[in-house]
Length: 317
Image 1: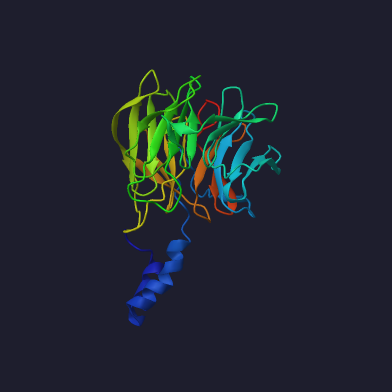
Image 2: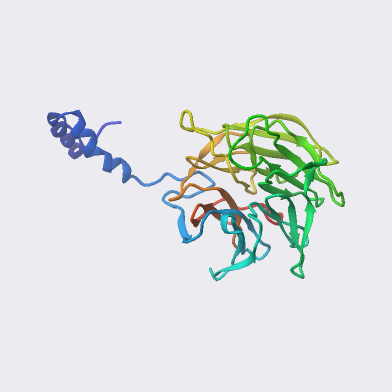
């Protein structure tokens, strides 16, 4: 590409001052360039904006049927509700560190607490849904998603710090069952998960490593054919991937929070681009009346970005 005449003169003048000065002078020009967006996902120039700060560690967002949003503040054991007017209120306190949230087909809220999966009934009562994986006590369940049948997929990486040799679980609680089955215990630190729109593929990420896995879902909720769905990009050498929460849109594009932003992949696992927020995101979910707002829970803040993409037709994530 040929530089314009004014730009060429500037470069020639700076070259006389030395390469370092030239780089420093041109850096702001590069930073000032408008974001290019992600085709079909985010329009050029659109950036994530802050909704509210003042939390401790936001997590677990899930969109409700009316377009509102629930999210967790795990270190103070609270669940918040963002209504359509933009008002945030405390929905539940004393959640025992509830992290991931999900909604049943009846609109009841599920919580991944420290040692169990719980459910808040429409009367406000809290009940235990599951507290083990095939008889093995839950360690620290992180995230969950409900399938079309009403079954629940759960990730349980255990608490920090990471202990070599300690088990981890991806499990499935079938509708009406009292005990989940283990569908994978070989992911080093399973965290975020989602289902494709047809419910035929389960996708799970790993907080420690850049590989994101896919599985074929069987009629009974078990899975087969574990394989690589995608490889996260630009993870700094020697760093954990930070792969955490996950969302999916109506075109089966997958959104994964990482140490370098929300990475977006198409349904084949091809990398499309990255969405950044001012703080490192921990989880994502589509909400709003038209499901064209992607919310990012990010440490002390809650962020959102208007999208071209639309969240799934199903309830929740």
